[in-house]
Length: 489
Image (cartoon, rainbow, N blue to C red; front, side):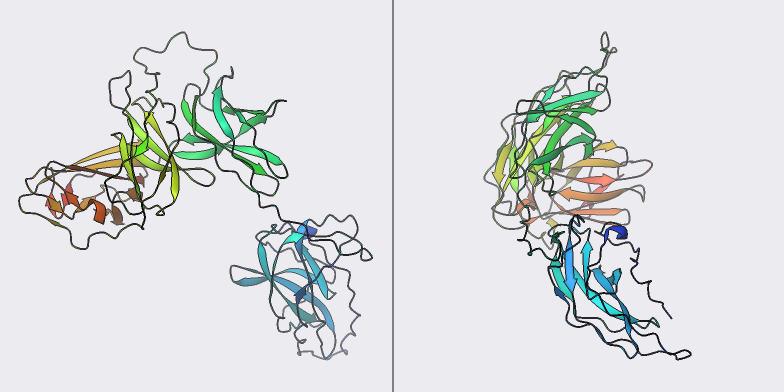
């Protein structure tokens, strides 16, 4: 038989969203002491359900600093011998867990997240450990607790701060003569209460990650940050402002900065390419193609001192960061899967074979075409006389890769609906997400199927699609490709 927790003690149970149980304080509503059961009597009768559970403005002890939480009250339960305590339970992932044991008919549960709603109930226990049925359930949003004495008037509700800071503007590089340091500067953000800090993100090995930064705010309106990274390597950065309530700003624009090599080398090693490509310009949307829930983007090509055409990385601004839309070998890209009629902001960066990055293009905002992503054509078929060629160009880093796939109709007739097929050589290789096709994978077999807007490939025309993937060990390319069941060259 389960025994009741000792009176006045807090159950130390792990609860998501709560601070340690030592900070969960009870209210001071006393319950009369219960009579002990007769010696030798076996009490098997549980208490009744507590009376109505409701949210009430219970005060805490003066100066207790309870912070954020919910205060609860309920009616007393009855028992044939006597009620000894109540378990206050909170619902997590569909299951109720006891977070507080009290002898009173009221309790404060603190350490919660401001503005988040929580569901509670209460059960009564007697001296023999019998647990009664639960009370009604109450759902209440956590708010600031009063911390006032019982004799004081109830406080006015404290407003919840849901206003984010303004986005950091004018992000740019500045020189820091420390080996491996990348300096950044921007105009400080503002907030309706106060900006509590900034998070700095860097593009490292194919993903943006928050990086440690020494942030300082001089007397003027500028903010300075120093990030320690790999000397001589190019990085993309963006910054997000935050306030004490946890609100995050929109991200700054992207900026490129190279981590300092200090002291500088006399000259690069022979054959070492340290010159970045030119900055992409002219980013704009292209009309004339039906792409429901998408945009067709194009920009001017750039040159590089190596003479090898640069690759292009496209980024889309999100609420608090950037999404990578993939690598392109040509200065254009189709972005699908967007919300029709909604504006989206993009920047593109050129990258040479040595990994040098250009400065990002100027931001460009495009409105996604109306409608959602279309379903693929149900029955792809190749017209008589069609042949095909597929090129597969992966860019691989530790544990991940991006593959650009080009389908070319080398035949004399149009392909009306298509389904590309191939198999990875290794079971560890997998597609994580893709674009310009409906990508599916079963085992090592991968298929990419057309959308309605790109179902037709005319003779001599090439179609560009691709995907991001993951692997372990090695990442060999597929040995063969088929289009509608026909092997391509």
